[in-house]
Every structure is written in structure tokens, then in C-alpha cells.
Image 1 (cartoon, rainbow, N blue to C red):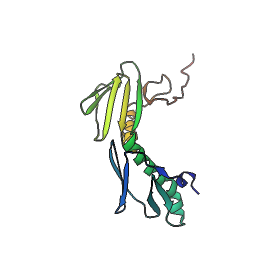
Image 2 (cartoon, one colour; image 1 turned 45 degrees about the horizontal axis):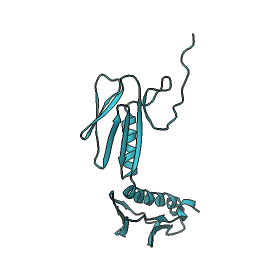
Image 3 (spheres, one colour; image 1 turned 120 degrees about the horizontal axis):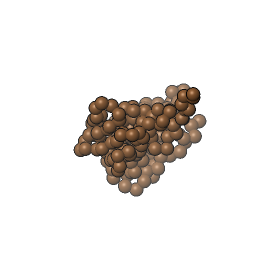
Image 4 (cartoon, rainbow, N blue to C red; image 1 turned 60 degrees about the vertical axis):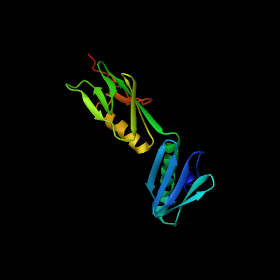
Length: 177
């Protein structure tokens, strides 16, 4: 049995949810998100929450149960609070600046890296070495953060590169004489 799946997804004040035609739609102060439903899982709108249970006793239904409950929770959290990730840039001459719908990165290459910001994502650069990515879709926020990080992953000797805030970079010792 799924311990996560047993819990109902609470719906906070100001958020409405509806299920129709195999799609769950959640609307809140930050926007609207939709998700297609899985046939093996039953979704029930109750007063104050959404209940997610397996529709039958198959292995697939039990495997999807906890994940589908978490995806519904991410919809509700996204439209009410939103999601954010913070990237930190370390290295001499490495910097970032947001210009309109583009993020301009200087990462030690012979050219600047211009990253086009996708719709539904907001990127702020409070200083030259910090990039704050926010939005209502958790998957899209994580994907954008991973794409930006991919331009210069942190290296283990000096720690130069783009890392998530709070990420531990395993450091190696350099050459010995």
C-alpha cells in the first residue's frame, strides 16, 4: 500500500478543482494547470480535498497510485504557491543577466550564451552570480534549471560552474609534486 497515496490532497482557500473528460483542472491565484488522468486510478473530489485511489487491484494501478497523488499535489501547490529553484554561479568572470525574455550568461566560452526563457517561467538575477527560476509548473521549472546548469556543470577541482543552491560538490585534491 502506498503511504503517500492514502493521504488526501488538501485544496486551500482560493483554489478550485474540476474533473471532466479524463482531465483534472486546478485553478488558483497564480493560474490554471491541467493534467490527463490515468485509467487505472480513480480521482474523487471531496469537500476540502481530492482523493486518489487505485481503480483496480493490478500491479500497474498500485505502481501509479503514489505518483499520481504527488502529481495532483504539485498541481495544487503550483497554482497556490508556485515553485522556484535558485542557481549559483561560481568562477572568475562567470556572470548572468536577464534581458527581457532572454538570459545572458558569460561562462568562460569565447561567446555569450543566450538562453530564451520559455512561457510560464520567470527568471530573475538579483546579482550577477545568482539566477532565480520560478513558475507554477514544477516539471518546467526543474527542466529550465537543468538546461541552464548544463551549460557549465560544477567541476570537482575548483568548484567552478553553475550549481543548485544547497547542492554539495564533491571536491578532489589536485596534483601533488
